[in-house]
Image 1: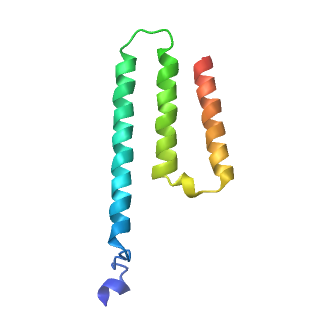
Image 2: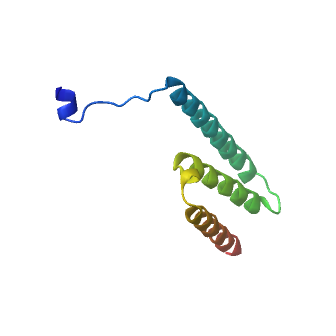
Image 3: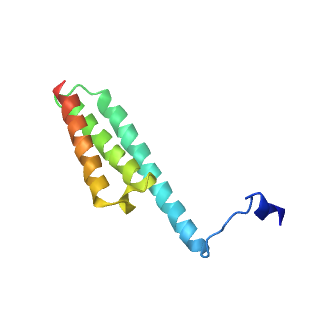
Length: 98
């Protein structure tokens, strides 16, 4: 009774398998982000002509992964999705132009 009165009660989902499925997808996304970060570090040490463009592209992919998965933008209105992609496109273009 005191738990409910002081908002200490924890609501568990009805289906435990939903939580386990979400945890698996979180882990997969996290591993992909770590791999992309390692690949970015590898490209940063190379001396190629378009290495900056490759690093910006990988940063774009990581940003989209975090925004759509961890910030749950995939459930948001289409307006916010288009706005985010547009902003990211303008930002990457501005960084590449400098």
